[in-house]
Amino acid sequence: MTFTIGRGNELVCSAIIHLASRILNQPLSSLVSNWGATWRHLVNDSQLRWIGPEKGVMHLALGAVVNAIWDLWAKTLNKPVWRIVADMTPQQFVDCIDFRYITDAVTPEEAVAILTAAEEGKAERMQEALESRAVPAYTTSAGWLGYGEDKMRQLLKETLGHGYRHFKLKVGGDVAQDRLRLGIAREVIGFDKGNVLMVDANQVWSVPEAITYMQQLAEFKPWFIEEPTSPDDVLGHKAIRDALKPLGIGVATGEMCQNRVMFKQFITSGAIDICQIDACRMGGVNEVMAVLLMAAKYNVPIVPHSGGVGLPEYTQHLSTIDYVVVSGKKSVLEYVDHLHEHFCHPSRIENGYYVTPMEPGYSVEMKPESMEKFGFPGKEGASWWRSEEAKAILEGEKI
Ligand SMILES: *[C@@H]1O[C@H](CO)[C@@H](O)[C@H](O)[C@H]1NC(C)=O
Image 1: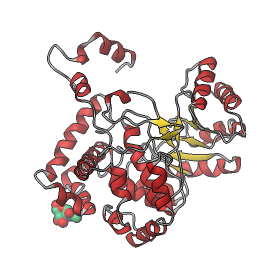
Image 2: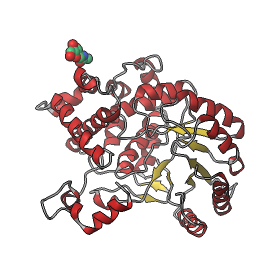
Image 3: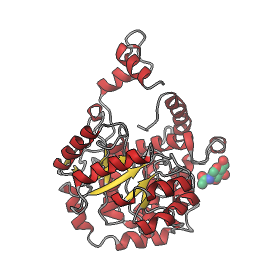
């Protein structure tokens, strides 16, 4: 499973076929026994690298292939993916990673040292994971642009009631309107009850616009501004971060950050306060493991991007790995309550925490009936995509 949309799916699916052909007929055991080398082999096709390398369509496809191997492997071991990694020695963890291009930020030897140091307290953190107290959730459900004041108030109160302590609001449409919305949010969640507010601009601003806009939201004390500008602009993020630091506002990005090399730059240059890895954008679990190590070394907390179908199912494993194995620090993970009914083992929240997944695999297997119903283009005549319901949705979204 990967996270794409519409016509983009077709490009990614054909890239998956090309990449997967590189490992066709190889036994699972040989793929995972030297994972770092398998990963390097998958990205080492000169014709395919020409249109990547390690980014865009090719990299989304790589993530799908790599994550599928993890899912299969976990099912043969009868463990959830997070547990495979939690049961590894530091050296086994490091052997999963292709360190090409990142040894200036972290070497395999340093990585072993980081993971060995993190073994202190690991047994306790593992116990917390088993009791579903490892990954606190946050929600964006009340924070979409376009919700009226009453709806916002009501949704915020509801989510507070469900045990959430972190709330994210979309911003960037209109500063007066956003000041009003953030005021309402603070009125409901308070300033000093340990409740945390975050804001997300989805790349709308230039660097100077981001700074002046956020200065006008500073009084509502957001923990961070997410995606203030272009996701490729490392120096721009650093400028924004430097300007907002005196106001106590952090900078977060990562959902469009394509690989460990870009993350190396964001992390080591001090451009971000929060690292928002995505489970599908990068080359699967192995590359995420590399980023977790760099983030731990530079003390940047991991708050994965998780706002999309199937993403919470994946990211719950990554946040659990980060807490139990790598950083040892509790962070938060986005949860969007949307379309989980199509998954065999949907992610769940209880008392404000993710319920740690215990089923074998990577939690993204979809129900056969959902696959059958929504497969595209579907059976001639009977396809959901030709139904009135689909038409209404597609026209509404102007696809
Ligand atoms: C990458 O591919 C080239 C030839 O296509 C080969 O010579 C090289 O050994 C490969 N490298 C790895 C690490 O697999």
